[in-house]
Image (tube, rainbow, N blue to C red; front, side, top):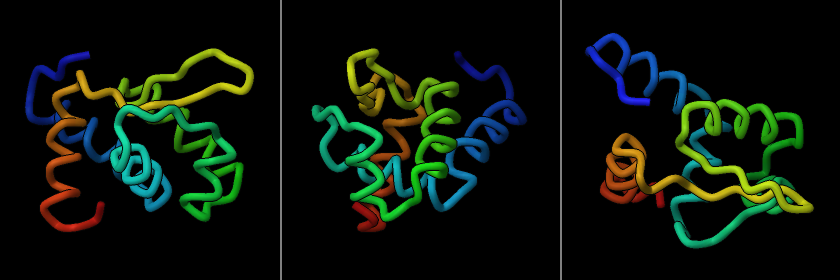
Length: 98
């Protein structure tokens, strides 16, 4: 999904990092970009309730920022091929969030 104009870009970024939960999930996934995470591991790492992890992952997967792997249990990894994700990771590192 490649945004065509400034408004689409804004909507995409605001949707992706528009909540504390999604930001925490992105932060944890960005700390180790080669690792696959389960929902349970993200709950432990972020301190979020299961319902918030599920909701956050749903949005991030829909945006293409997080890849979902259909294993048992399902696993998730940050999508480094998405240009927005690359910028967000660099930003989070610069501000020392990760």
